Image (cartoon, rainbow over all chains, first blue to last red; front, side, top):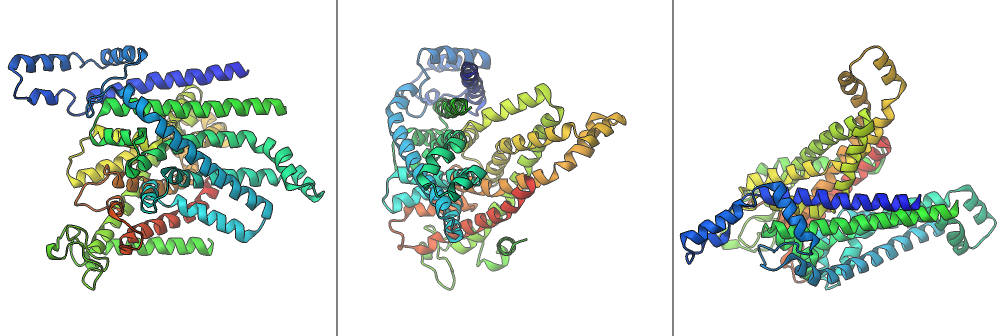
Length: 288
Length: 269
């Protein structure tokens, strides 16, 4: 059963990769200006060279052929060359990915610590005023655009990871609070509380086993949110990561680079979601 | 309706009326430049001062609010209609249609929203006319933002597929198309309304993000995104606090929508 689930997730990832690649090939091929190469405007080139450039562009006009060629190159680790930066996409990604992983990792740690801390304290204290305050706090962050939070982090000179954390926190908090509230309202947990069992024991022995799989699913989704938040934070905080690269590629209409980044990011988020789902499945299996 | 929801509706009404009355309230158009007063602080003539090329910030805020507040609901309407057609129809038909639609929406949903937006925006020319950029930005939001709503509608329509009234109508010889349009779709109205209201603040925030990143509405047309881009040049919080007015207004408007949504979500559920 578990292997079947893992295999299904693997197939979904592969299908995403193939379909995403095909869509990217369409985007690149049919984007305005595909047939034109900046090099053709070089006055040093003679007519034969210009014609050769035009021929080379024309050879890529068949989308399926173009896609298959790109796929073959990708299998060998060649993701193409960035139009705007003139460098191989794979080396650009290799250089910038560590910073983004650190930023996203720290952002997730901050958002989850804050969300879990507030949701748990809210469940333990059971004070309406506290509940209203925490909900208002997360609601306020939810209403501020991610890019503004990134700008404010620059203004207040705080690390970009804090901005990522604050972008992800309200989305995570909403789910975590609801899940914990539902778990704490269960009859056996209310009985345990009435019997005077410590809150920590209730949390570890009764609440987390019930809410754990759902919390893991939220954790998977939060990876996607944090990766999305990396674009404005890296772009506006001047951090040389994959998010900034995607933004620069969008401004320069560098589609080969942008589509490679999007496929990579999609795979990362799919893997995070699949891992959360499989671990949640295992936990549920253990409980049963 | 609770007192907070009434306040939220009141606030939204006031903001919409003010933005529609921009022609009367603003001292001049959003593009008019007062070159001798560039970068001026707030004064009687310019309530929120002027920007770096001398345009009245208050006028730009009113016109920008009009653009964002009129076009975000239009984009939400487009995405809700697409979700109703794709998700609702797939849920109603069931079988392979439902599975295919769900697989497709899952694929779409696995893409981080902002990555998807900037990728699609980059495919289109960036040096387009301001009016075209408004249409492109909000159409893109509407055309790409239907997937989450489609998922909810698919589930809701699947629940109606084998309900008693649908079975009776089918037994009476009603065609499948009529069944969907006349019997199923009207029963999805509460979910459709909820999804419509949920999409509006999401699209307002997305436009603001795109605008700040320079991929939204082009100058000289104002929008909340382009107005918030001014925060980029600030060195300290207290330096020019009036530059935060668009942000405050945006937060107030989105909060008002969130307060209304909490009611809609209950209905949708």
